[in-house]
Image (cartoon, rainbow, N blue to C red; front, side, top):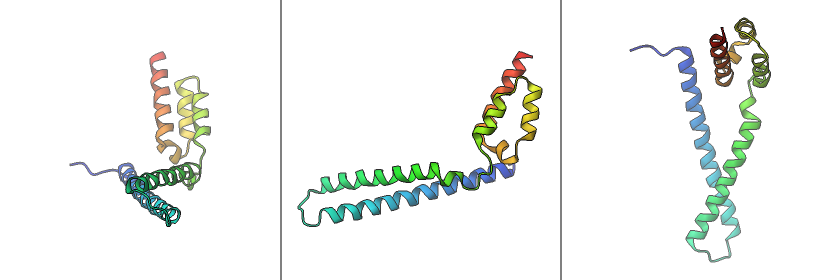
Length: 131
C-alpha cells in the first residue's frame, strides 16, 4: 500500500478541521437558538412543534451567519495570495510557453490551490490541443 504524500496528509487534516469546525458551529448555533427561543417563550404556552420550528429557524440563521463570516474572514486567514490575481494572470496567457512561465512564478500555496490548479490544467489542455 502506498504511503500518503504530504498533499494527501494536508488535505486530510484540512478536511478533519473543517468537519470539526462545522460540528462546533452546528452545536453552538443550536444552543444559541435554544437560548433565544427559551427567552421568548417563558410566559407563553407553546406547542412542542412550534418550539422545534423556532429553534430550527434560529439554528439555521446562526449557521448561515457562521458560513458567511467564515467565507469573508476566516477562510482568508493565512492566505498570502489573492486567487483572483493568480487566475487573471493564468487567463491572460496566450500559449503553453506563457502558461508555464506564469505557473513557475506562482507561489507554492497558489499552485496547491484547487481552483488555480484546475484552471491551469484546463488552459494547458486547451493549448496542447491547439498545438
